[in-house]
Length: 104
Image 1 (cartoon, rainbow, N blue to C red):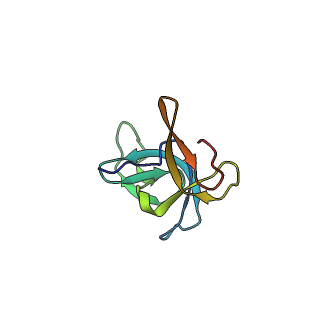
Image 2 (cartoon, rainbow, N blue to C red; image 1 turned 90 degrees about the horizontal axis):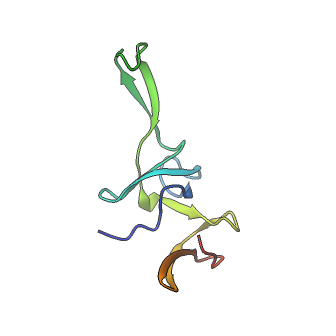
């Protein structure tokens, strides 16, 4: 398993696929499948039957996972996509932006 450099709560931009250019916050990361769920990106329609939880039923829109290789982190300083590096500062490993060299 590879070390993923994108975590929940990061702001990312989609760089490939049908939703190229869309931005959003990472809600969940699945390390086993190398996929992430991004808020407002890759929306799918799910048909639901009426139940006690949703008595109306109908069509529900929800986010589907997107491949990690298709998203890139947005640098908080420059507001552009950037690669992420890992370095040791003291006793801790920290993530940093390769464009601005700023700790994330």
